[in-house]
View 1: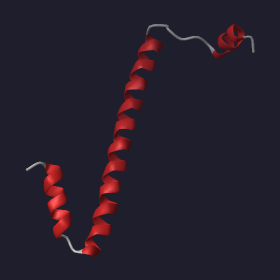
View 2: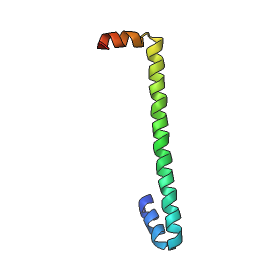
View 3: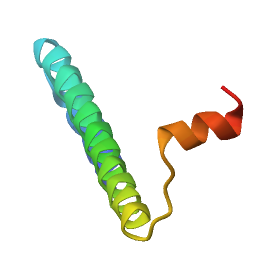
View 4: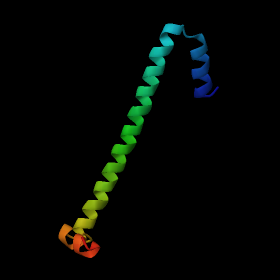
Length: 70
């Protein structure tokens, strides 16, 4: 039996008052997971930015505005 099937079976057996709490907790877990993924992406982006700085692959804001004609 898959985890999803086990969850569905447990939901069917759970008393109604617990279902709202279970739903709230599941929403919390999903949000937490998404935040962790976003945080991991931020860490990867920072590593890439640090690498760009160390390898002189950046330009100043002044240079950028000049190139863009601003």
